[in-house]
Length: 491
RNA sequence: CGGGGUGUAGCGUAGUCCGGUAUCGCGCCUGCUUUGGGAGCAGGAGGCCGUAGGUUCGAAUCCUGCCACCCCGACCA
Image 1 (tube, rainbow, N blue to C red):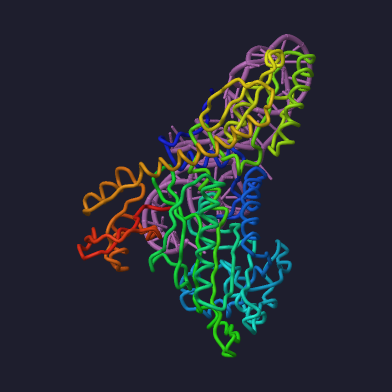
Image 2 (tube, rainbow, N blue to C red):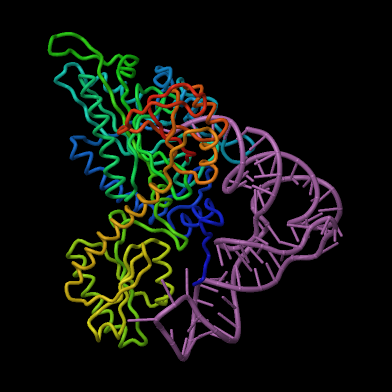
């Protein structure tokens, strides 16, 4: 087979870029740091959106849409929020262009300066809480459970396709509650939605945890996250759910009258996942032959390739193939029948392989004669002959087996890449030799965390929610610690 | 944003030091033979050499600005 992929071994980041490009998911655009998500990449995002959106609706949320522009004054209200985002904001200062006096193109019309500059949203808490003030008077107006699907802009200095781009697509949920308990429950509920989505749809095992103060969302009281491990041993934050306390309610003056007739500030949460998940999907499952997609998120789950020598055979084979196609479709499987005569079967095999289609069915004259087909699965690259009778159920079972296998493979990779370190030397050695998640004791101070980051580039990914208390000594400072936290180098 | 590198046909490249409008492979088009893992042969099309200036009789080549991408750092939910 012709090889035009870099391997993970040779150059992991080139391998990643090759997959994005050659699987036709995205390309760089004329604008620095921004990518064009191509139809194939976008259809994966649509599959993710579909599954997540249903989960949001099932947990009582509704979609809405808020402006992309945020007045600068809104943005500056919450101190920590400003601190976190100010350095990466795109700002609109003018609203008109005019012809240049020298006749060479367009220039900004200085007479069209905005009285108040507009920030292009890096996240929408401020505009949303400014809006919620008008929506909430009484406890009867609560809770508000809103999600928006949107683009956001964060002016990143260094970008990578899907993982970090200046503009990206995401969803952001913003909820308002009458009590702290209810807001905390919402935060936990949405974290569960994310972990369920990651594990059941993406087939990526994740660890639920709490962020340390250093890694917390700017403006949150507490940030919860799901952390996944990529094949190069680096961690990836796959989703976050924030308990915002009354921080935004206070600065935007969002009060309500409770059942006792007293005024109180509203409790808030926000939560989001982005197109970064596509990067996670690539790095969790793909191999040196290209993309590998879990069936539940594959835009096409099965491709059928006809094999023939002449036009008579072509027609005979295609007739049989179409029968199979319609059986599979009736079973709810997404199928592409590639009857193009402009490409040879071998070419198609390779094409669908590096695009990660979970199952390929090849059917030729010999198969028609024997009433069978050749079935190849992308995850293991194994081929097997299937009798056509009951093909739809056999394929449905196979898809589900592939989904499970991908999850199990990713899980055992993570288990094999998870280590405990009890000394500083051990910790450094593990990081350099193997990467992965390292459970280690930490004294709980931001200073120690910062020092460890400076010396090793490893950060505390999270304090796992299911953590067991365990007395020990901080690997860096030697000070007492009550539990292990997860360290890793991260994307 | 700092340091380094790159930019030549859709993609990957030679040519750049030592100025004379461009090489090769893949892909594309046409025809014939092919079709169970990226087909073969023959013919053909396609490039103001990233962009804007400058030097020169003449610039892909030398000089300057700008843009984009890659690597390293800083930064970063």
